[in-house]
Length: 156
Image 1: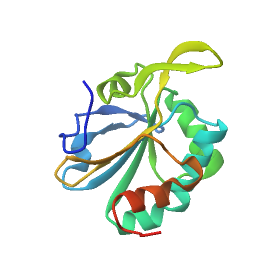
Image 2: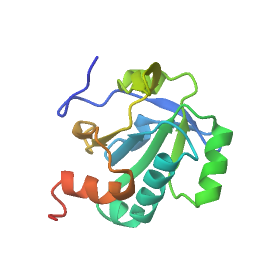
Image 3: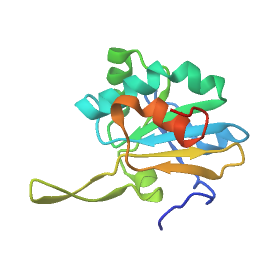
């Protein structure tokens, strides 16, 4: 199933960096930036996480919660959060269930090789649980601004 803007965001549930269950039910009535990324501690993923962390107060002032999802373990997420002092939860989707539900676990090609991997994608979900925006061409170094621009919150 391919998700589109205007669709109801699928239910998700997973374990965060502290071993606690995080589910979409916790965000009912709240706006959510749900971002999917390939791997902790890689250059693009670190740039994206740090940029979202730098813009975290701006995003929360706009009423957003931020949650990242990757196939890394909860232990890997805990180290990643500690290393970069991240302010938001990361879900360990080691079974790739959330990734598949959101259609971001897919075939990728790099250097002539085909493999399964995470399509870096951000879903902006409104307080009613509807996908407001999907960003599939993520600017890892300026993602907060990209999100705010997509929502029309900032012009430039």
